[in-house]
Length: 312
Image 1 (tube, rainbow, N blue to C red):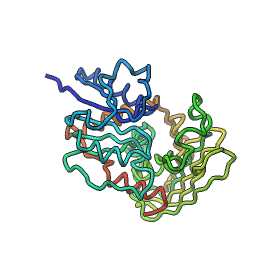
Image 2 (cartoon, one colour):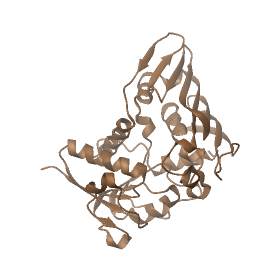
Image 3 (cartoon, one colour):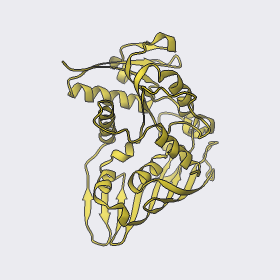
Image 4 (spheres, one colour):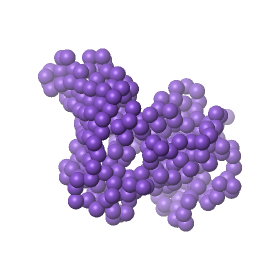
């Protein structure tokens, strides 16, 4: 008899809706039964594209059961701490969208020892990153440069960029937190941060009060790295340059390609965003089933958050 999963979502914006659709597809393909509830904090109507996948809608903590298998924390970053505090007692596992909190001054007062806490780090599961992880010896890496540059007003074309959380500092906005993936995958590939320095600022004409540029220099266990993040680049760039003793490797996270610049070798991968998002969800299910170690628990996610503020 297949397992029946009882799942709830706190927040169904774009990323929550994506996770919900992917979860439904994964469990459907595995022929496992499931129910999905929505815990909403406003009077917002159910998103039409996922309305048929939602069983029950709740507005208050006291209204929901305390026997969920998974609760997804996919609401705004500034709400994460309070949401985790409350809902960790209602479920066996929490899947928390990145970053864990809006500031490293936030901490949980109490942690449920019987709950699994996993914080999203989906870029780790891209095929190009997995290829580097599995094929490049980190001890052979001298340094690396990562850049993620894009134009914030074009991120969510259906809404005014000035109204989205990315633009608002006290809602957890700012390029340093939005693009926390870069520091995460660098640590995943080359080890923990030993020293880190950060300059962040608002230098463009974008009408936001959050940072639109963040630059890091860091010493990891296995490499010296530089990171450039911005909201104002008019041409999307997301690349990683790796300098080894034998070659210089260019990893393009947008075209899903890897080029070895000295040897001339080039590798290309077929991949969509849902592919690596699903890969992470499958890994999360394996954690719940005891088949994988939790690689991004509260402690690791909080350490990464501190690093984004240039603090070891």
